[in-house]
Length: 268
Image 1 (spheres, one colour):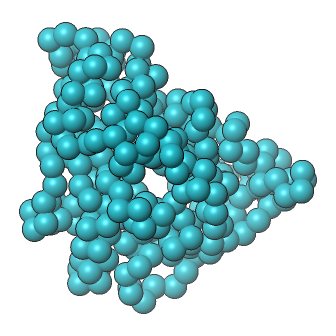
Image 2: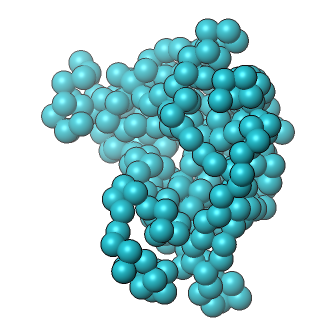
């Protein structure tokens, strides 16, 4: 969406105080753990862009709460698995030999949008160490929720998603749909689907040296995420509203994961 189209979506600029008020109307209060998936352009024209949205989100959650976002860098994976776009086979070894190591403070996100890309380097934000599926957090429990992000099964039991579950956090879809909802990956890990694990790899720093590591994961497939999200909202419920011009959905992370785990077992 162009900047002109963002202007046309709203009657007036969407300023931080408006965003905070809209978040309050969704039931978001200070002190909660909130996982946010977002689209800046969907909100409308925001003076200051992504930092203005982040300031509003921090104000809404407060330092007594914890604000989290996925900050994935999916190009930090084995190039043999790349399909969007694929690379020539003869490039693969060279890419694996020369790709810089993942570094939480430096490595950019890929395909996550302007808000998470800005958030990863925001003051007092902590980012997890997983090279492909990192998450970043700010607030009371920020360091704790991202500290022990396992390489194997990075959306499973030793992940920030499991930490949000244990803390009874909430999920906010801000101008995006359930196809972007990473909470559902935890349900994929917990569902008994009888699928074989897959392997991937990436370069990281270990004791100051670049090394290529390999890790296991469950097969991930977002194709049915919209269907399970729709079923959850219909059968369990979620708060719907507007944040600026964006459709926003707030739901309970634990309820969603439990529902989706059973849904995947019945429908996949």
